[in-house]
Image 1: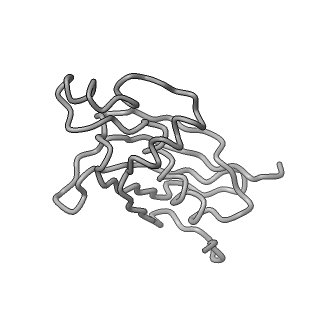
Image 2: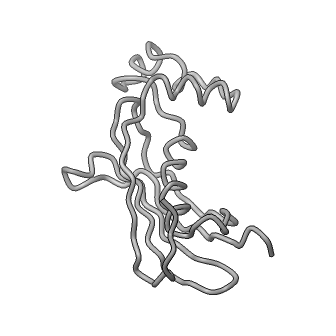
Length: 137
């Protein structure tokens, strides 16, 4: 689904997904990241977590769905300014939320939030801003 109407400040979209073990394995292969807490469930449990930790960038990737669907096919991610506020355990459900904060012909600016357990009020695990830029320009 691509946006076909002009964006307005305040437009919001969310995307909700559970971070799975299979996706963790795929991201390990894609990134080459073999950080112990991300690939060794026993080590993560020894450190006090219920399971391996999801890759921060994999969690953040959920927000790209919101950015792309709001901005449309003629835009790409041009800038991110983020804080990674808390770890996410594999098996957790995350809700990514993007809200339009400014629209010009040169960029579309967004607030980004990723929440864990959003149905119970949600705890922010990633927060910040993004700018989408035209593909050609």
